[in-house]
Image (cartoon, rainbow over the protein chains, first blue to last red):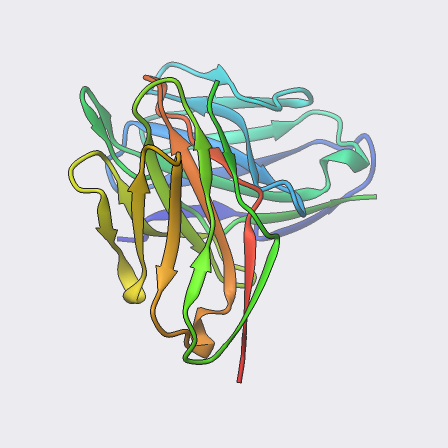
Length: 115
Length: 113
């Protein structure tokens, strides 16, 4: 099992460019998440997908869109990148069913620099 | 609303000394609590989780944490620090039906030889 994989590992963008961050999991998890990590701020939730076909905003959704392509894949899109979106982006997944709080499993991250 | 506070953005200990990383939470309902570790340039790895079964939770790499409802705390401890424990540690809470995690700001652990 590869767990949670993310591509690309690194990316440099110019202000106004667009890009899509890819995430895939092979653990048959139904819930997937996108976080951003900035120094001194922990991880903040951007968007999540509780199950295939659903997506919801998290704490910091502005400037981002997501697509839950299928049960395995959850992509994050920056339509017009801004320097404030320079960050490390993590995808995570978990199994979600009634009465159980399973842990989230994280990918290795994508480091994004917006100039 | 749920929240997590980690006291001390940096903690420094000598190799072999006790490690104590503090986490306090705020939740109006019984919480689920997690500790994650992040090594440089890597993703987050689960250390341990509290899901109301037992108040003392043992995790990987010799770490453990105790849930104290009266103190709204979930501090992480390890009796004897090892150089390989140097990393950033995050406490997180999940206390509603959305399964979202709320993270603390993290504590960077430095282990001195």
